[in-house]
Image (cartoon, rainbow, N blue to C red; front, top):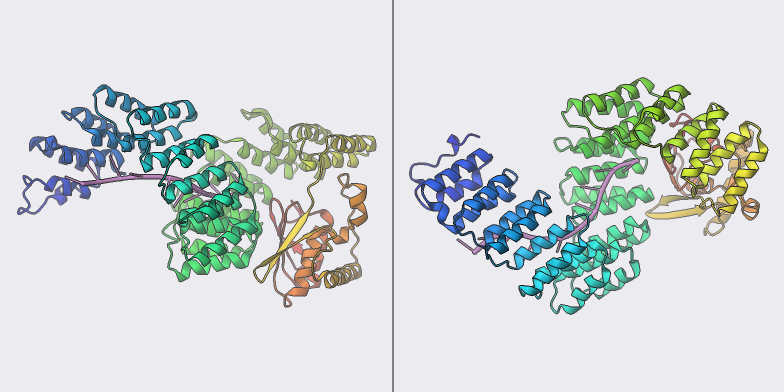
Length: 624
DNA sequence: CTAGGGTTAG
């Protein structure tokens, strides 16, 4: 829209006082605001402090503004008063320029302009934008006391927030305790403080003591539990919230969806989807990508695609990333690459994460040519500097197809030190192709860089095992034992009727354990009839004696979960299981056969990808 | 006359 089109009708003459200001709200470009500004100077309205401050506000904080213009205006005003200074301060925060904000504050004091409580709330916010906020923040606190604003509720709330960001719980608490009439915002900030400190107990106590709770209070609790992986408690809070009558907002739903994604409880995710539809909530970029991510993490690609289609017209890079990554982790590599092409055609600029997702798809799908082209495009067309994750994908891409020279080339030319992820990818590639020489080198590096991860030792010992170096297998096992590294217990869960059932190896705690083990026996029989032989090729060095007694391959947690699924659902229903570790070789081959024998789709999400078993095959094409 | 706390992708 041009400025000419904005000209007021003749009856609204530009010389009346309000007109330039009302025009300001219509401005869509900086140039238009500049013209309003010029007019205000000509008609001397600029000397009206109210008018000048509204113009400053437009410049400083609107999306169409310009911080530079705001600062120029400030210096051109004859005797600017506190409000205008505050506006420009706020503008600096919006543009993430905290140092400038402090300089402005100095100038303000030099010009003998008295700061008010707004000034200090803005300064405290500036502190939280600094990398090392503690020292300067405490100075601000002193100034607050000096100017007598320490009893203002907003200032107190911001102070608590500031101390919370610095992790200074004692100081935060001091402000909180000394204040007499804090509002729900301050209570929420205090909750956040405990959440940041991962102090779940105090958090809960405070929450229960709150005189008033709002949607933010509930959101803080839910997202805390999601962040620390206490999914059951997160869902319990969500239920309590609904009982309280507080309506969930978009933030609540994004958090809950993240919880659902972690637990893989598809039914709960579907409930959220229908909740959004029922309440006519806007599927914006955030909620859209959270929904896509949820469906993808539950192994339900149809759902993810459905939501993706619902988000048409409102797709950010995040939305595309969620869908590309969903296709990739669910074994649809080629489709993921194709969707990236569509993203480009749609004119959405890919970011570094987009390329992580696409390159990941290429490596898992063995798409060497596509991956190479994509990597070059990232650098040359989009001018994105690859980070270690991108180089990791490239090493994986070449390693998986046995192009070790190319993988080495990446390692040699990249501008940083290789990380554990890279060594792991290379070591497992070497294991598949029996490249024992490079495998040993990579495995040793891996063990050094990820000494707390039991899989490092397993991989290296596997390399030694295939080259027959049994003494070294022993040495690695001993080292692992000496360092006290343990395999976390494997566990698998399955959601049925809204309840998540969790199983560990040889689990005997489930109420229907008798039926489950009968089913397991039957599964074993039918596998044998189909000519199946247990795959014990994996070196099980991470299993101690005690565990060995209870651990038969047939009683792995994923098999228990599947058996429970078989006896609890009607024939042909898809079985969805989430496992915390990687699925083992034996379970993988059994599942393929079981999907055929029982005519069931079985979807297992392991620690890094999905296995869709159907008709005797797996979507990962035995690459995982 | 005008303003002010939290969530998010492998």
